[in-house]
Image 1 (cartoon, protein in one colour):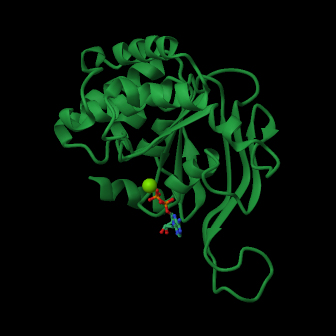
Image 2 (tube, rainbow, N blue to C red):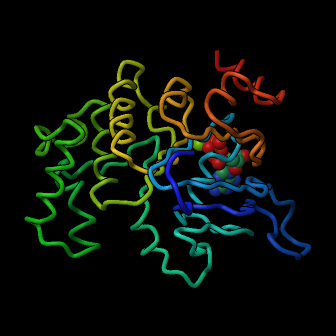
Length: 258
Ligand code: ADP
Ligand code: MG
């Protein structure tokens, strides 16, 4: 892991199940344990890449970090403070993180500029000119300054995803969470989004990324974490996990990708 000092984000023994009764009770059927004691440390300016088969818990992990899902047990420490504590102001925590999904979820009826300025203006009360200046800078960074007046359906999938990433960055998050942001894209458009992520990585953005793009993982990850049935099954540098996997499930997962 690159970076020094205390981790910016840590998970300790995070457990999450869906359905059933979460604690004790007899009614409600059998709970499906999706995260089964996950530990993770993300140093400032480092990049952790989550890999694993569909259903292994990658999206759930990102969603519990963004406080979109409650955990059943364990801690999510942001700068050492447990944000999984129900007394924590979830909106304040979410303002420090940004999650971008596979489906870019842009507001279809709003121009690109308004997609970027809506939350800063409405949620954070920033004046329009200030919010637009920040949005323009972010659009320039993702190479789409000339699309500020366009509507989402006038953009390619790759451009829409770059706008979604720009929108995630306008709030100046401390950690960028990316959930398979290239999976819905036409193969020809994947490269432009990965190039953008590489730029962000070079600038030192702290990132937690779920992806099936192993070439990208190899290029950017400080640590690759292989999730299997809700557990960290294997972890290490890209060379360790991707080129010299120690466990059968990791080997099987990598073999199936080819
Ligand atoms: P991945 O992103 O690695 O494909 P997910 O985190 O989406 O995995 O899903 C892990 C498991 O949790 C899957 O079995 C999925 O069906 C289940 N799951 C995810 N979200 C929910 C939900 N809201 N309700 C019930 N089950 C869910
Ligand atoms: Mg997923």
